[in-house]
Image (cartoon, rainbow, N blue to C red; front, side, top):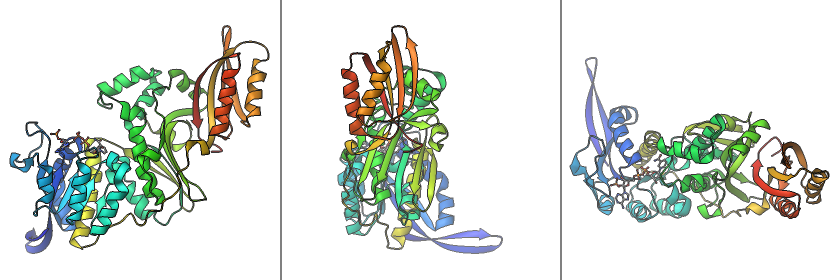
Length: 446
Ligand SMILES: NC(=O)c1ccc[n+]([C@@H]2O[C@H](COP(=O)([O-])OP(=O)(O)OC[C@H]3O[C@@H](n4cnc5c(N)ncnc54)[C@H](OP(=O)(O)O)[C@@H]3O)[C@@H](O)[C@H]2O)c1
């Protein structure tokens, strides 16, 4: 980091400003990295005027030197040797947008130990070894910032760790995966089946060729672990997160949900209980149509935060995409550069080792969709099984299907274990042909 003197004409007078030049080593130049290069190119002068920090991308690490990245930078800035960038004494700050655990983890640790602040967007890395790297950053007295890893372009990490640091946050519920929200929105708005909606998401570039990480909830689970860690100040890793994806959601589920006043969303739900324990889960959830999360459509994301003093807050925007993610990375870069110039750094603070509850210890309302023989006494027998297992029914709908009938129930809040034993008893009943689907439901009493 070096000081630079520049002169700005101002109606005859000349203003002399001292700017701190910060040379950035960029690890990765894919969707996010290339968008960051463009954004810094466009905004560097305005950033310098506002902050006194002159940002310069000095070197860029990539895997292939042959790709055309569509950005106007000299070829000589590129290298395949990411470690050399981290070790370069002329690099002040490192941005990691490679993805994956290694070599990102080792490169970040080395940069931090050398006193270089690091900004990363790497969800997978942070959800697995984020607290380990945060400790390395604290020991070295430099920043490790990761706004983009929580909810992409939506500012969430900074509000949670700064604005809400004194707040008792009880629950954070988020639509944090644009691919699955796009698929569910298509199914809901156009009555399309899951496979058709997924194919459309793939053709529009909203879903990868292998969509597993998105549709099975792994991506949302990684974000949920990061969000819970920051919101509750305790260590939660990806392996602590229960997750179910959306691949079993049918057009019929969506239609029934709508009929009953709900939409189906893949939610990441992070909760903290009075005893200090937490629960973090990702699953398709029926959300009442009048809940603020219900209206979040297409590839948009939103995070709903509930705090004891502040009440309800919602953060909405683009959770992914090169430019929105680069915007969050750039905010962190400026923050880290300012801290560096003042020889200070931010910290996640002391993280507690809280107990993470298993899914079996949780409760919620449930939606159950069953096919039964259309015979006298079947409804009473089914309702009896709910009662025997302490699961009380809030509403029920019945539809004739020839010799069979479809029964759709919404329960009051019930424990996961009670619902599991109810399902076991129901499937043992000869009149129950099949259990089509079981979904968790939020509101009004959960
Ligand atoms: N895309 C988003 O919307 C989004 C949103 C939030 C967070 N993120 C996170 O941001 C990170 C980057 O995402 P992305 O979408 O930009 O990924 P990407 O398009 O796959 O880009 C990854 C970049 O890293 C380079 N790279 C990978 N391994 C390398 C290695 N060992 N040495 C040198 N270069 C290497 C690749 O080089 P080549 O180009 O030569 O292959 C590529 O330029 C990920 O952690 C992701 O989870 C992304």
